[in-house]
Length: 510
Image 1: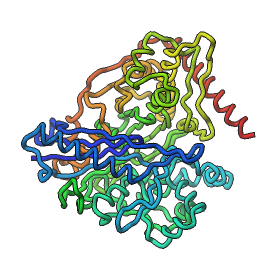
Image 2: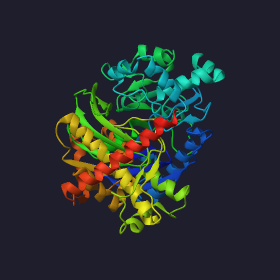
Image 3: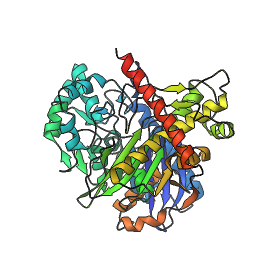
Image 4: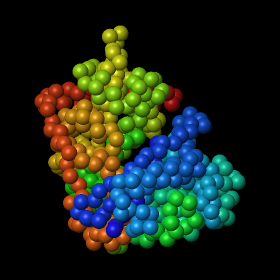
């Protein structure tokens, strides 16, 4: 028997999967459970996670997934687990006790803007080009390095623990591996490392010049960088899992979705619609740099070689619908957004720019904030909901357009996943606005599934990426259904809305 458990530690919740790889070409999810946790907003534009709450959500989701697996497959028990895969929200900064894994502070979430002033200073000092040449990333509060510099500059007690070597610093994967191994492993892997602003994407290692810029800190303060399918350590001292289960696959969440969508060939692309929307296109071994505002990131590292990807990031996607549900209480559940909005019309008259956490690719304006434009006395709730869904699709259309500019050719098919990909109206809007075929798989939880596939690869259930391709199947295809003229009109209106938001942001800065 070959069973893999996968932990998908996301921004708003943790999902655990138990996957039966007895027939590797036809893996079956036999246990799945998700546990949400709290978001903390201590100040305007600050976002934090309680790392103990995250760990509790890991335990709770795994316990329930394991229970379900035992109920559904009499052959399964915890002693038959071959490996553990981990995927995670990426740029969130974790600081914890190196020996025990106990958190020393709340996690500073990728959405947090507290390091905006640091970013402005570094840009003014002319560091942006040098950082991009080494990392493939922009200088932005989004990334881990700016968050750690903020801690070093503003929290003397915590800074001293880091400089004394008592504190482990890393992204969520490093924190979870430390907890799973009772502090025995202090490691990360290349796709997560590539999101920190410390990682040189050409050398495949930490870069001391970058560490000096964002610290100064020394490389020995940071975790060891492993391959994406590798040995990361053994479980130890856990109440919910036996000792000795190897952790064999780790990927950042968007890279895991690329893997789960089996986008292993150069030019294949996926978009994940979760809290944010993230589009990645496989670049193979080509370390290309975008002229249209995309990031160059590491897709994965296998057998000593890096695979690269262009990435576009929309910071608010599914979170826009959650905003309507939780803050404005316009809807009672995210699922009803499709049925309410189906008959309404929003664009070209009404636009919702969901820039509540700034604008990501290709605009890169951390000062921008969300806006609804075109409201009249006759604007209805259904129109507002439709505009929020269309705002997500317009953002992703900006990304597909940017990639087409960089690669001099359109993406032929966009594979989609994540919770919001279940929304047919959103997916049809995506096909229409991007003028692209949208391919939704049977399993839209491809982030967790991608981590399971790489864990299976690290556990030798599979020999290579080619063996993994049969694991994906298509559920529905969405084809463009509007005219080129209509698409142009809608897109022009969207760009006017984007320009209005950016003008307001710049004006509000004085």
